[in-house]
Length: 311
Image 1 (cartoon, rainbow, N blue to C red):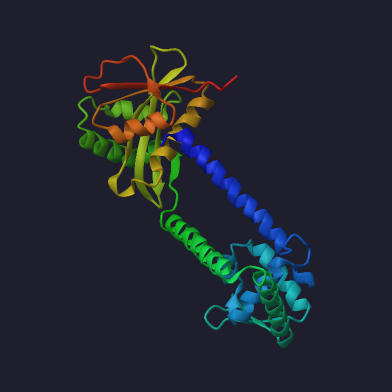
Image 2 (cartoon, one colour):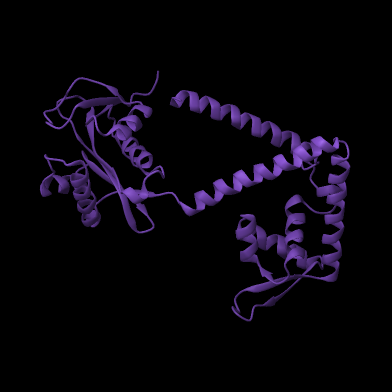
Protein backbone atom coordinates (compact mmCIF):
# COMPACT_ATOMS: atom_id res chain seq x y z
CA UNK A 1 0.00 0.00 0.00
CA UNK A 2 1.45 3.37 -0.95
CA UNK A 3 1.82 6.34 1.36
CA UNK A 4 -1.16 8.27 -0.04
CA UNK A 5 -3.43 5.25 0.42
CA UNK A 6 -2.17 4.68 3.97
CA UNK A 7 -2.70 8.35 4.84
CA UNK A 8 -6.26 8.28 3.44
CA UNK A 9 -7.05 5.12 5.40
CA UNK A 10 -5.69 6.69 8.59
CA UNK A 11 -7.82 9.80 8.06
CA UNK A 12 -10.94 7.62 7.76
CA UNK A 13 -9.97 5.79 10.95
CA UNK A 14 -9.41 9.08 12.79
CA UNK A 15 -12.85 10.26 11.66
CA UNK A 16 -14.45 7.04 12.95
CA UNK A 17 -12.83 7.29 16.38
CA UNK A 18 -13.62 10.99 16.74
CA UNK A 19 -17.25 10.39 15.73
CA UNK A 20 -17.55 7.72 18.43
CA UNK A 21 -15.90 10.01 21.01
CA UNK A 22 -18.38 12.79 20.27
CA UNK A 23 -21.33 10.42 20.58
CA UNK A 24 -20.06 8.72 23.71
CA UNK A 25 -19.18 11.88 25.63
CA UNK A 26 -22.59 13.34 24.78
CA UNK A 27 -24.43 10.10 25.66
CA UNK A 28 -22.79 9.91 29.09
CA UNK A 29 -23.39 13.57 29.85
CA UNK A 30 -19.68 14.36 30.01
CA UNK A 31 -20.20 17.66 28.22
CA UNK A 32 -22.02 19.09 31.21
CA UNK A 33 -20.01 21.24 33.57
CA UNK A 34 -20.68 18.96 36.54
CA UNK A 35 -20.26 15.17 36.55
CA UNK A 36 -23.54 13.26 37.13
CA UNK A 37 -25.17 16.55 38.18
CA UNK A 38 -22.93 16.57 41.27
CA UNK A 39 -20.72 19.31 42.69
CA UNK A 40 -17.67 17.81 40.98
CA UNK A 41 -16.09 17.97 37.57
CA UNK A 42 -15.22 14.75 35.73
CA UNK A 43 -11.55 15.18 36.69
CA UNK A 44 -12.39 15.74 40.35
CA UNK A 45 -14.63 12.66 40.40
CA UNK A 46 -11.87 10.56 38.85
CA UNK A 47 -9.33 11.72 41.44
CA UNK A 48 -11.77 10.87 44.25
CA UNK A 49 -12.18 7.42 42.69
CA UNK A 50 -8.39 6.88 42.60
CA UNK A 51 -8.00 8.04 46.20
CA UNK A 52 -10.77 5.67 47.31
CA UNK A 53 -9.01 2.73 45.65
CA UNK A 54 -5.60 3.27 47.25
CA UNK A 55 -5.19 5.12 50.52
CA UNK A 56 -1.81 6.71 51.17
CA UNK A 57 -0.75 7.54 47.63
CA UNK A 58 1.03 10.77 46.75
CA UNK A 59 0.23 13.61 44.39
CA UNK A 60 3.15 12.51 42.20
CA UNK A 61 1.53 9.08 41.82
CA UNK A 62 -1.71 10.70 40.69
CA UNK A 63 0.16 12.86 38.19
CA UNK A 64 1.78 9.79 36.63
CA UNK A 65 -1.27 7.55 36.58
CA UNK A 66 -3.68 10.19 35.26
CA UNK A 67 -1.10 12.10 33.16
CA UNK A 68 -2.17 15.41 34.67
CA UNK A 69 -0.15 18.55 35.34
CA UNK A 70 1.31 18.72 38.85
CA UNK A 71 0.08 22.26 39.43
CA UNK A 72 -3.46 21.33 38.38
CA UNK A 73 -3.45 18.28 40.69
CA UNK A 74 -2.15 20.42 43.55
CA UNK A 75 -4.99 22.94 43.17
CA UNK A 76 -7.65 20.20 43.09
CA UNK A 77 -6.22 18.48 46.16
CA UNK A 78 -6.12 21.79 48.04
CA UNK A 79 -9.80 22.23 47.16
CA UNK A 80 -10.58 18.76 48.53
CA UNK A 81 -8.83 19.58 51.79
CA UNK A 82 -10.73 22.83 52.10
CA UNK A 83 -14.01 20.98 51.59
CA UNK A 84 -13.17 18.39 54.24
CA UNK A 85 -12.77 15.51 51.76
CA UNK A 86 -9.03 14.90 52.09
CA UNK A 87 -6.37 14.75 54.75
CA UNK A 88 -2.59 14.54 54.32
CA UNK A 89 0.41 13.45 56.36
CA UNK A 90 4.15 13.32 55.65
CA UNK A 91 5.56 10.08 54.27
CA UNK A 92 7.93 8.20 56.58
CA UNK A 93 10.11 7.25 53.59
CA UNK A 94 10.29 10.75 52.13
CA UNK A 95 9.38 13.64 54.43
CA UNK A 96 8.99 15.92 51.42
CA UNK A 97 6.11 13.79 50.07
CA UNK A 98 2.60 14.00 51.49
CA UNK A 99 0.45 10.89 51.71
CA UNK A 100 -3.17 11.43 50.64
CA UNK A 101 -6.13 9.88 52.41
CA UNK A 102 -9.85 10.52 52.09
CA UNK A 103 -11.71 11.63 55.19
CA UNK A 104 -14.92 9.79 56.14
CA UNK A 105 -16.83 12.49 54.23
CA UNK A 106 -14.51 12.00 51.27
CA UNK A 107 -15.08 8.24 51.31
CA UNK A 108 -18.86 8.66 51.41
CA UNK A 109 -18.69 11.16 48.56
CA UNK A 110 -16.52 8.89 46.41
CA UNK A 111 -18.81 5.90 47.14
CA UNK A 112 -21.90 7.91 46.18
CA UNK A 113 -20.37 9.04 42.88
CA UNK A 114 -19.17 5.53 42.11
CA UNK A 115 -22.62 4.05 42.78
CA UNK A 116 -24.32 6.72 40.68
CA UNK A 117 -21.91 6.15 37.79
CA UNK A 118 -22.52 2.38 37.87
CA UNK A 119 -26.26 2.95 37.97
CA UNK A 120 -26.11 5.27 34.94
CA UNK A 121 -24.16 2.65 33.00
CA UNK A 122 -26.56 -0.10 34.08
CA UNK A 123 -29.50 1.90 32.75
CA UNK A 124 -27.67 2.46 29.48
CA UNK A 125 -26.77 -1.21 29.01
CA UNK A 126 -30.30 -2.35 29.82
CA UNK A 127 -31.42 -0.74 26.56
CA UNK A 128 -29.10 -3.07 24.60
CA UNK A 129 -30.11 -6.73 23.86
CA UNK A 130 -28.06 -9.27 25.81
CA UNK A 131 -26.19 -10.69 22.81
CA UNK A 132 -25.23 -7.23 21.53
CA UNK A 133 -24.32 -6.17 25.05
CA UNK A 134 -21.82 -9.02 25.21
CA UNK A 135 -20.41 -8.08 21.81
CA UNK A 136 -20.15 -4.45 22.94
CA UNK A 137 -18.27 -5.20 26.15
CA UNK A 138 -15.92 -7.60 24.37
CA UNK A 139 -15.21 -4.97 21.72
CA UNK A 140 -14.49 -2.35 24.37
CA UNK A 141 -12.13 -4.71 26.18
CA UNK A 142 -10.36 -5.41 22.90
CA UNK A 143 -10.09 -1.68 22.11
CA UNK A 144 -8.52 -1.03 25.51
CA UNK A 145 -6.12 -3.93 24.98
CA UNK A 146 -5.01 -2.63 21.57
CA UNK A 147 -4.48 0.94 22.77
CA UNK A 148 -2.69 -0.18 25.94
CA UNK A 149 -0.39 -2.41 23.93
CA UNK A 150 0.45 0.46 21.56
CA UNK A 151 1.09 2.76 24.54
CA UNK A 152 3.38 0.22 26.22
CA UNK A 153 5.32 -0.24 22.99
CA UNK A 154 5.73 3.53 22.67
CA UNK A 155 6.91 3.83 26.28
CA UNK A 156 9.43 1.02 25.79
CA UNK A 157 10.74 2.69 22.63
CA UNK A 158 10.97 6.41 23.46
CA UNK A 159 11.53 8.77 20.53
CA UNK A 160 15.06 9.66 19.57
CA UNK A 161 16.47 13.13 20.12
CA UNK A 162 17.98 14.49 16.91
CA UNK A 163 20.66 17.18 17.16
CA UNK A 164 22.72 19.03 14.57
CA UNK A 165 26.22 17.93 15.49
CA UNK A 166 29.02 20.31 16.41
CA UNK A 167 32.67 19.70 17.23
CA UNK A 168 31.59 18.50 20.67
CA UNK A 169 29.90 15.55 18.91
CA UNK A 170 32.94 14.73 16.77
CA UNK A 171 33.72 11.40 18.44
CA UNK A 172 30.15 10.14 18.02
CA UNK A 173 30.10 11.37 14.42
CA UNK A 174 33.32 9.54 13.55
CA UNK A 175 32.09 6.34 15.20
CA UNK A 176 28.81 6.34 13.29
CA UNK A 177 30.44 7.22 9.98
CA UNK A 178 33.02 4.46 10.35
CA UNK A 179 30.28 1.94 11.12
CA UNK A 180 28.40 3.13 8.04
CA UNK A 181 31.51 2.80 5.81
CA UNK A 182 32.03 -0.75 7.01
CA UNK A 183 28.39 -1.85 6.73
CA UNK A 184 27.81 -0.45 3.23
CA UNK A 185 31.41 -1.11 2.09
CA UNK A 186 32.01 2.52 1.11
CA UNK A 187 35.13 3.06 -0.99
CA UNK A 188 35.04 6.88 -1.20
CA UNK A 189 35.21 7.86 2.46
CA UNK A 190 35.14 11.29 4.04
CA UNK A 191 38.46 12.78 5.08
CA UNK A 192 38.94 14.23 8.58
CA UNK A 193 38.83 17.71 7.04
CA UNK A 194 35.51 16.91 5.33
CA UNK A 195 34.00 15.65 8.58
CA UNK A 196 35.24 18.84 10.29
CA UNK A 197 33.35 20.86 7.66
CA UNK A 198 30.18 18.82 8.31
CA UNK A 199 30.39 19.92 11.94
CA UNK A 200 31.32 23.57 11.43
CA UNK A 201 30.23 24.89 8.04
CA UNK A 202 26.77 26.49 7.61
CA UNK A 203 26.71 25.02 4.08
CA UNK A 204 26.89 21.49 5.50
CA UNK A 205 25.41 19.61 8.39
CA UNK A 206 25.57 16.33 10.23
CA UNK A 207 22.68 15.20 12.40
CA UNK A 208 22.89 12.56 15.11
CA UNK A 209 19.94 10.74 16.68
CA UNK A 210 20.38 9.89 20.36
CA UNK A 211 18.42 7.43 22.48
CA UNK A 212 19.15 8.49 26.05
CA UNK A 213 22.87 9.24 25.72
CA UNK A 214 23.59 6.62 23.06
CA UNK A 215 24.17 7.69 19.44
CA UNK A 216 21.73 5.67 17.31
CA UNK A 217 22.19 7.03 13.79
CA UNK A 218 23.24 9.92 11.58
CA UNK A 219 22.72 11.71 8.27
CA UNK A 220 24.76 14.30 6.38
CA UNK A 221 23.83 17.23 4.16
CA UNK A 222 26.60 18.67 1.99
CA UNK A 223 26.72 21.31 -0.76
CA UNK A 224 26.08 20.25 -4.36
CA UNK A 225 27.58 23.19 -6.19
CA UNK A 226 26.96 21.93 -9.72
CA UNK A 227 23.24 22.69 -9.19
CA UNK A 228 21.72 25.95 -8.06
CA UNK A 229 20.02 25.91 -4.64
CA UNK A 230 20.76 22.22 -4.17
CA UNK A 231 22.50 19.96 -1.66
CA UNK A 232 23.19 16.27 -1.30
CA UNK A 233 21.99 13.86 1.39
CA UNK A 234 24.66 11.34 2.41
CA UNK A 235 25.52 8.80 5.09
CA UNK A 236 21.99 7.97 6.32
CA UNK A 237 22.68 5.28 8.88
CA UNK A 238 20.87 3.73 11.87
CA UNK A 239 22.55 1.16 14.08
CA UNK A 240 20.97 -2.29 13.77
CA UNK A 241 19.66 -2.45 17.35
CA UNK A 242 17.77 0.83 16.91
CA UNK A 243 16.06 0.15 13.59
CA UNK A 244 12.27 0.07 13.06
CA UNK A 245 11.77 2.94 15.52
CA UNK A 246 11.34 5.77 13.02
CA UNK A 247 14.86 7.08 13.59
CA UNK A 248 15.74 7.29 9.89
CA UNK A 249 12.57 9.32 9.32
CA UNK A 250 13.43 11.63 12.22
CA UNK A 251 16.93 12.20 10.85
CA UNK A 252 15.61 13.00 7.38
CA UNK A 253 12.99 15.34 8.88
CA UNK A 254 15.70 17.33 10.68
CA UNK A 255 17.96 17.43 7.65
CA UNK A 256 15.16 18.50 5.27
CA UNK A 257 13.90 21.16 7.70
CA UNK A 258 17.39 22.66 7.80
CA UNK A 259 17.62 22.57 4.00
CA UNK A 260 14.33 24.45 3.71
CA UNK A 261 15.42 27.02 6.28
CA UNK A 262 18.56 27.55 4.17
CA UNK A 263 16.39 28.29 1.11
CA UNK A 264 17.51 25.17 -0.73
CA UNK A 265 15.14 23.94 -3.40
CA UNK A 266 16.47 20.45 -4.14
CA UNK A 267 18.05 17.57 -2.26
CA UNK A 268 19.86 14.94 -4.29
CA UNK A 269 21.08 11.54 -3.16
CA UNK A 270 22.56 8.38 -4.57
CA UNK A 271 22.26 4.76 -3.48
CA UNK A 272 22.79 1.30 -4.88
CA UNK A 273 20.47 -1.51 -5.88
CA UNK A 274 21.06 -3.73 -2.85
CA UNK A 275 19.89 -1.03 -0.39
CA UNK A 276 16.21 -1.61 -1.14
CA UNK A 277 14.91 -0.62 2.32
CA UNK A 278 16.63 2.77 2.10
CA UNK A 279 15.44 3.32 -1.49
CA UNK A 280 11.85 2.52 -0.47
CA UNK A 281 12.11 5.02 2.41
CA UNK A 282 13.37 7.75 0.06
CA UNK A 283 10.58 7.09 -2.44
CA UNK A 284 7.94 7.25 0.31
CA UNK A 285 9.29 10.66 1.26
CA UNK A 286 8.99 12.04 -2.25
CA UNK A 287 12.43 11.41 -3.73
CA UNK A 288 12.11 10.68 -7.44
CA UNK A 289 14.50 9.20 -10.01
CA UNK A 290 16.87 11.59 -11.78
CA UNK A 291 19.91 11.37 -14.04
CA UNK A 292 23.32 10.47 -12.66
CA UNK A 293 24.77 13.65 -11.15
CA UNK A 294 28.11 12.46 -9.72
CA UNK A 295 31.02 10.10 -10.33
CA UNK A 296 30.42 7.78 -7.36
CA UNK A 297 31.51 4.38 -8.76
CA UNK A 298 29.33 2.43 -6.33
CA UNK A 299 26.09 4.33 -7.00
CA UNK A 300 23.44 2.82 -9.28
CA UNK A 301 20.34 4.74 -8.11
CA UNK A 302 19.98 8.52 -8.27
CA UNK A 303 17.09 10.41 -6.69
CA UNK A 304 16.13 13.97 -5.89
CA UNK A 305 13.38 15.75 -3.96
CA UNK A 306 11.94 19.19 -4.53
CA UNK A 307 11.65 21.37 -1.44
CA UNK A 308 9.62 24.03 -3.24
CA UNK A 309 6.37 24.85 -1.51
CA UNK A 310 3.26 24.25 -3.64
CA UNK A 311 1.93 27.44 -5.19
